[in-house]
Length: 390
Image (cartoon, rainbow, N blue to C red; front, side, top):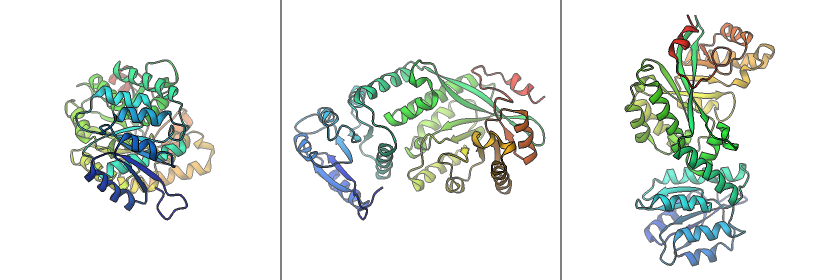
């Protein structure tokens, strides 16, 4: 966040006629260093936006016009078309209203009453994305939203499975990672683009949990004794979806103690304190934590130290070309040493050659996954997975 002492102070426009909420937001936003403008009606808001605004909090229920109308105007106006909008709604907001707001260009939704830290996490996320993501035209955003809704509503994303093998002292099946493959044509066919779009448009939790449910149905009783890695953006932990996630896994036959929540680099951790407090809830119920892509992305030493993971996955870009790169060699040796000292399982991803495999084994890496051992597959065949280590 840019503070009040910075060269540029960010301005938040709050459009809401609930005086107690307005006063509370004014206090906490200004305490955090934001400049705050308020409007209690739609027409007043349209006057306020003549000045610079960095983010808008918009209530759907206004005394003179519907919030949907205000949202439409804001996304048409040249001065505010690229300003992030968080819709504030009551519990009685209809799904079609939510979809309509997203179609008009709204960026996020928050239901009253909301947690202040959650509000700041969402605000910071949108302001950060605004600075690093290209602005989408209204038509582009609508088409992405349409395709994304089709993927979710028609369940057009399939779980794939890739085994993870221990290699020291011998090759043995350790667990299975659940991956995602969109069953769609166009730009969203790329899994990374699909999940980035879901994060940007506010549908990440629906998409990721859809993959989890489909994977758990396939895993069934056959894999109840296996460790299973489920990819999870830090956003899902920050956004406090624990009860929803716990319900999904509690209805499966795989115990929580066999489940690794694999934190990916699809989003950064914005509110460290909030994130780690909520992560404790998962651990209380037996879930384990893995940090993905160590050596790139958000997986900094700070996140590893604070998260205290049970497993660390070395990024494939470090593994690739490892045998001829002394710097990569040293990085892997450091990670292996760190993991041994703290009883963490060290997994190397993206192992594609016999030379890489042999070198990683020699360096003391605990486990590996990659095309050299077994390619991701939509067919769950535990016998085939286990035969690799026979």
